[in-house]
Amino acid sequence: MQPTAFVSTLFDGKSNPNKVTVAFTMAVNALAKGHSATMILMAEAVELGRPGASDGMAIGAPFDPVPDLLARFREAGGRIAICGACMKHNGFTAEDMDPEFEIITAPDVIDLLMNAEGSLQIT
Image (cartoon, rainbow, N blue to C red):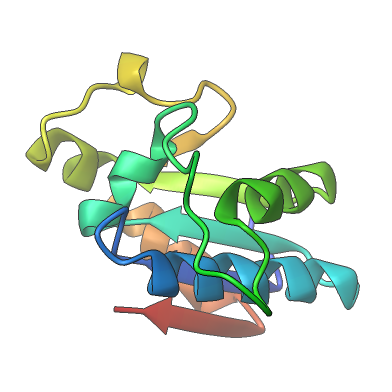
């Protein structure tokens, strides 16, 4: 995976829509400011790698619903990476995931973080 200027790591999934919303809000704003961006889904957040997994996630004003944020993020060139080990640990396979998302390894995570100009870890 190619490095990006902004990297956000998200560890929570559907059980914590507040954290998911904030992570995608910040990633969308990084793109709006002209930075390239990657969102890494780790631990429980890998469940969001499945097509339609964020449907219905909305915490209310002033935040946009997660599906809208995800669409804007992708349309603006944002990339989603899925921790492969986390995916397997949580009982998912590559076939379960959105084919447009990249499955990465621990060394890839390190490379992304070490080459980023800024990062945000949502744990």
